[in-house]
Image: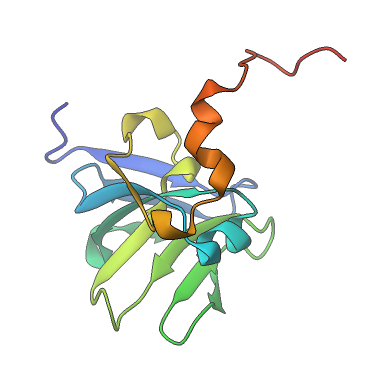
Length: 137
């Protein structure tokens, strides 16, 4: 897939915040750390890292100070988590939650990170039964 000069778009659930980002990313991963898990309320979060100046944001995300250097940006209206910054560890970079892309399938993750904190049952999650829609009771 040719990602050079291609852009992707995304938004929060209610549409108050939208963004455009390059498809050519520094890395794209599934993070299993406890901070991401607790913030998202999910067993893992998909992130793509890009230079912050390459992202155009429409709307004004709220900022949550999640650790000494970590800043999580989200929509104050609907609560959707969107971005992560850590200028101490990753100066000039912005992580974007790729689940908020208009087409999340356009940017498949390439690695799992922070697996030392992975929820134990995630190791076998791929073996669970699958349903195309919510199963009948």
